[in-house]
Picture 1 (tube, rainbow, N blue to C red):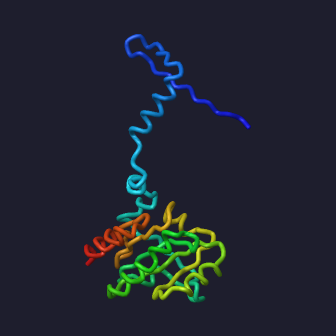
Picture 2: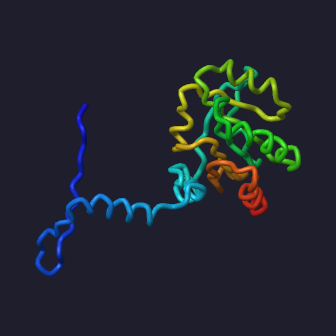
Picture 3: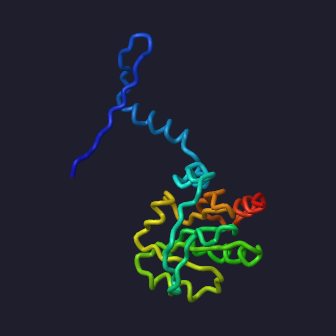
Length: 191
């Protein structure tokens, strides 16, 4: 096993010569890194998901089989606001978010929710869904191709698509304390 070592060289600006720090250099680097690091609870808010680049652009269309055996095509729902929720049965945060999303769909007329399950084992998704009282379609994407198309890097991620097919929000993560407030605020701005 190889050991990688990094050497930190700090130069004096007036002489352009390296300043020798001996054993203090690693401690100095660690102190700088710790001082600039965000608190653990803030990290998800500070690291934007690559999928956010879709905001303001046309949502990529997809046609995938649902857990029930039908087919779901995003473009067939033009004229409706659609929440595209990426999840997996092994994702504990996803498990907390799914009932909240289902309740949101029940409260908002004209809102279409589609789950995109990325479990490699479709039966795992079906088993999990059977234990829930959900009222939305879940498409199966075992190869996570749609995740790649939408540039989703973190789960859960919800993409809000307006009635014209434009992505209005890419919401990464879920917190029971904050609930779906960011999604609800975005929905309130969609005519």
